[in-house]
Length: 187
Image (cartoon, rainbow, N blue to C red):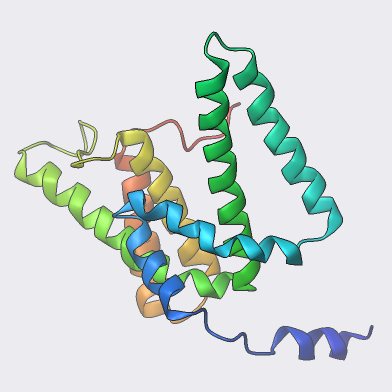
């Protein structure tokens, strides 16, 4: 394959995701109880290469084996199965999107989370520079992860800078103000 073939292939426009996926992505961050809707994307797993199937199989085993060794193996195995199904659903959704540019609607939901966290912290009279951010239903660790996700969306979702720069700046602020160490890799 020549360099011109690779360039031509990378500029091929990707068809937009179906409307339900774009709306779901926008609502996912502020209303994360909607996450199980991702199971509708499970047929997208068929597109994955064999190596990815091996990784998914290892992940499923890494969830089930510890669950079976607990004092309540049936309950914990069922919960592990639900987590595995949700993870497989997200992988299938990612495979069906074909491009990180399709994640742009997720930025809308993340922005709503950031505004809610900063607004609630301000309404409670807390100083976000000396205390952790507050949120109605997200922990500081979840806010830190939402900040990290916002940085990734602003960097890789593509699109115009007029929305990516403010989203990335707000995400970095949330990441730092959350006081969460869950976003930092272990040293």
